[in-house]
Image (tube, rainbow, N blue to C red; front, side, top):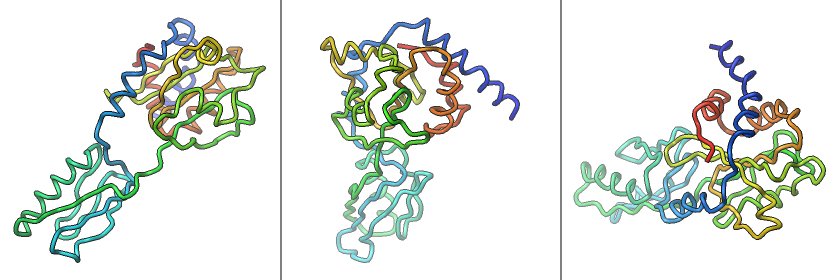
Length: 240
C-alpha cells in the first residue's frame, strides 16, 4: 500500500500538467450555482461547532454541547447522537424525539451557539507566501480575487495569473478542480468567483518546472485531505 501511494504521488506532477494543459478555463458564472445553493441551504452541523441545548421545565438539562471531531455530540440522558451533515433544524427534531422517550411532551430548544471557524486556503506564487501557512477566515461574500489579495497578492514576476486553480469539495462529495483566468476578473470586468468554506486556491507558477513543488507544498502540507484523496480527485474528477 505504501509503495502504491508513493507511485501515485510520483505521477501527480505529470497528471497535473496533462489536466492543466488540455482543459478549458472555467467561466466565473459557472460557479455561481454552487454559491447560491450554499447560501440558500440550511446550516449543516460540523465537527467543532458549539450548540446550546435547553428543555422547557428541566433546567438541569440546559448546557453547551460541543460536536467532537467525529461529528458526534453527547446529550444528557439520551446519549451520543451523530450530528455530521445534519441541519440544525433536523438535529433539533431528532433530539426532540429522543427526549420524548424519557420525558413527557418535552419542549426542546437546540441552537447554534458558535460555528467552528471556516477557512479558505490560498497558495502558490504569492507575495511573502510561507510554507505550511493555514487558511484565511471565510465569511459570506469572500471572493477569489479578494482572498488572493488578503493573502498578500500574487507575485507579479512568477505568477501565471491566467492559470489560477480552484479546488472545491462539490455537492456530490467529490473534489473538483476549476481553472480561472484571474486577468479577466482583475482587468476585464469579468465577475469575481464567490468562494465556499474550505475552497483551496493555487496560483500557478509561470513555468511547468515547479509542479513538483506544488504537489509537495500545497497538497501534502496545506490541504486537510490525504494524498490518496487528492490523487483520487486528480484521477477521477472533471475539469469544468
